Length: 476
Ligand code: MN
Ligand code: MN
Image 1 (cartoon, rainbow, N blue to C red):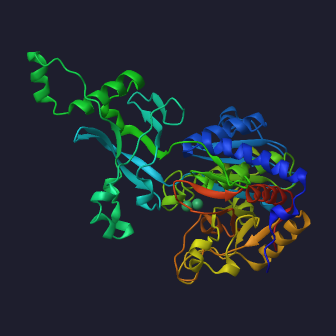
Image 2: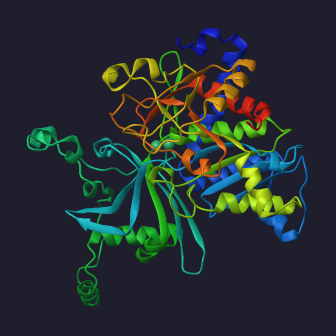
Image 3: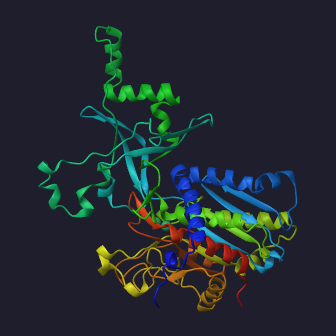
């Protein structure tokens, strides 16, 4: 099957609309770089569109009915949206799902140390990264510090022009003869990914006897001491507060248009914020639905969907139970019926065809940038292992919807058979017996500090989600 290029069929008006959607997307990428920041940004956007907090509705004992729009947040790191439709909810929902965590370097719980005149923060990388890509680039620090009394300090350093940035050093080529012979997996080790955060020692009064005695008790070096002083003065936190912090080191800087033709977007964290953004935007674009629309945006996909905020947690099921309860129709059977009758687009990025690494792909079965929304019937590795293999009947239903709404879509596998593979959240939702397919957007340089997408694919995917929310029905 020849893949259509979206740009070739666009009218000027469609190009304008595509640019408008991507402008919003780039603003989202630049301002929401962590799962917590995504949840905050999404909550603010959807509240403007009339979405209300389900937990407040439960606390107030209010009931819900068709037309109501609600959301529920899980520990500040995952969020689920519902737009209640006219049809009985036992007939199932149309569900969009994506993840809002991205590969990065996480600051350890006892991170601050001094060596050779530099103050460092020790990190442990999160998700699948090529470690050598993270050295010598401007890095920003995002996250929260929670004090024992529960008070929270939000940290974002390195995004504003006037902010300082951080970096991981690398060996100069002149002295790298040994390093350059190492395998790419070893050339930069995990423990070498500590970020440099200071080089200026605290100026101390050398003649002061009392201070000398204190120095003996506290072995912290002068540069580390200076950093601690800054943390206390500017953020009101002490070294011990790192214990209850979640600080993420990400590439500094905003999303950019890429290419002389401005056809692409280069940004950190497009896996999987490209699907998350287009999913919740589609929810906002379809204010009235026949079938209840749902959008699940989860954390921890990059490390296996584990934990209370990952897809494997019961949070989704518990939340649907609460929703049914507020609608006055909760029973264990009604919940099971609703979930098994649902249809889902489980979205994540797909590996876009890269001509420089052509041998890694099957050219007929790979997504291309500009080729439209991607449908992956299956993912997995070594004989589809670990994959959610979507039903042909479901694929046929989706084809019909996309053809009707003139959505440009393509089918793809991640890469050449037996070369590798990856997982998504699709198989977890499939456990309920619902129809689920992997879908999403093609990305070049996936999991690199800066990933590339096609603007046209962002636009087509958002349109595809809209069409799905409007037209998808219970299968069989
Ligand atoms: Mn990923
Ligand atoms: Mn992903």
